[in-house]
Length: 490
Image (cartoon, rainbow, N blue to C red; front, side):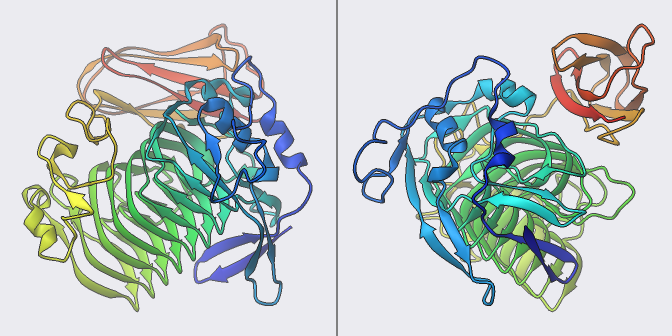
């Protein structure tokens, strides 16, 4: 069972660990013959998993073993009176090589990678189960590429999503995720979905997050009594969210964020609500933000440069590019906050080191600027190649088109698929079932620059009503090809 604590307008979830693991069984059954989980090479050592001899995560088989072996996630116990956690067991891990996770798109009947630690919740009935990761993971500044998540979304079951889905007293450092794709989930972030009493350092993600999500950030969904420092988020966010959305973090509670940046797009397409959306975070309460910059290359109209709803918090020496995005306001609301030297600046000033150095940013050990990298915006010195190489710089893609998440999703029997054409051209949108069979050619023709939409009524090309289940829709132009996921629930 989980308990609910309320702080202002944000509902936080804190969980008690249980000893039953039935909730992960459905996640760990693979439909295809993929890489099998395999323990690290030093698993049998007497002191394996300690700070002196951490478990070595050297390949995808080891990473899958970690994601599907709750016994090594560690354990905490919560004091019901103080609501503080005591660590019962804690294990240490170190990544020792780059890992290509491309095949995760075929794992678990299309749901992708199983988060390391997670909470499986029903947010309407206020019940669920949780299995937090209580460990230390050092990514060694290596790269995990092409990691894929696409959990089934329903009112009965929603899953916290990220490489680490749910953490308590975890320390995550030197993790780099490239080309990550997340479609849907509850409390979603590339590195951590929901973090309590944890830390993320010298880490970052490049990729996309889309679909039906609640509380979504490029790095982390929710952070509670957690620190994030020296991190980057180069993530395109395109969601339908009823809660907080942020370029770095969805919601910040009693936590600190420093020396980090966001560079990407933010679209939140929930027209029926007024979600909190900001370049740094959607909402912050009792938070401290320092030395953070934001570059939003494109956004929906309800996005703010820094934080939408800022309460009992401090922010200092932070900036957003107000020229490239056209975003004029840093905040939607601010209550009992302290704001020190925080501005929207034109692009040219955002690419000059003196802009930041004059406000105390460390350009000796933490930051640097190279005009050939990251479009000339500051980068963190630790960031590994190829992230900061001249040919694969930290820049979100600039496609000739952009496919949005369908709405509603799940749906019955109709859903709207919207897309943008940056340049005029031929477009096809096809719908496939989970077996990869094309069931409907929805769009085929020329489209002009601008916004377009089409409705799918749940019928196949032969006019037959399709059954409930997971479907994929693929948009193809001369320069752009992408696939998104939707669920028909009858």
